[in-house]
Image (cartoon, rainbow, N blue to C red):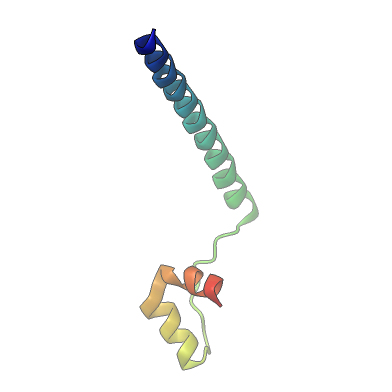
Amino acid sequence: MNRFKSLLLYTTLTVITVVMLFGVAGVEKRMNRLVQEHHLRFTGQIKNAPPLVAFTTIALGSFRGLIADLL
């Protein structure tokens, strides 16, 4: 009986995981489509920025978001 409960638990958790992965994939596709439709990506250069802003942009790259959250 104990082995049956373990097998049932693992099967249930596996099914839930697969369903959640498909759900996340669907949401990600929708978000990517919305980003493209509304032109939400900024890829231009920052011009006439103070030296501190330019340094932060170039040197820290993607860690800017973490720094903004901390501030």
